[in-house]
Image 1: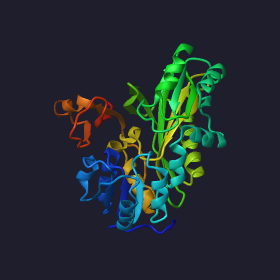
Image 2: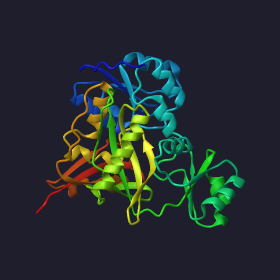
Image 3: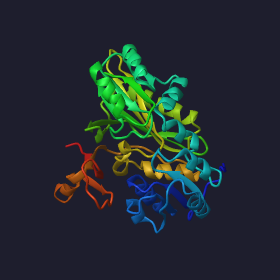
Length: 361
């Protein structure tokens, strides 16, 4: 369903997923005079705290989905593992932004890499793996070390194993589910960066500045802006991000993760795309005229995009597990905290982030 007319204040936005991204999208929508309705199977979802409108039901419950669609004017999502049938069911009833095609591509690493390659966007060398024999052949082709990954449902380091010796192949293959898998050549990258890009219903495209990302235990730890890369490389990253959203006919905010590969002229490989607001874009809350959450809401409403200009340097730091307990004593005038309202602290769970503005002396 498509309608290019901008939606007015008071519009009810349906959000699939009740985690911290859904919570922040709901807060951004409220600032623009919109209402939100969160759909999530988890009754303890933190996004439920910021809106009175919610549905607690499974993503395959068509009765609940139909009632949800009837209650909203436009639908978006906060995570990329919304079942394809759910997306198609809802898209037949109300505008779904971004569309189901972006979900389908980003949910499958092989489909994603094929899509990117079709647009001449470089990705790491890789091979599809359905059997142990496929894995042995892939190792012969790509060499070791290499990274074996599930094609679906992997995030924050889940669903992948590094294979350093051929003797590790069989156990890695047995451990990873669901099949098929993909083996990726190990990329000797210098650093990781990301670009958060937005495309409006009318086709307008705007990117935020690139962030330089550091991971700990496969989970994003910090995003530093500006990234320590050349202006030319940053411009190239933004150009590749634009190619992706245009090719997808995308509406909303999308995150593109890159490897920076060293050389006389450093090059970029796309690691993955995320069809949603992105953890590495949380810094925009503190130092941008329009942050990524407002930008996404603007886009799905059919409004003009806001100015993504950055007004200061910043470091975003994720607080994982009981790191969040240190917040009260660690704040200063240059630090902006955002706690997600999660009631249970668990090892490896994202509980909050802080944006630390870097001021010149």
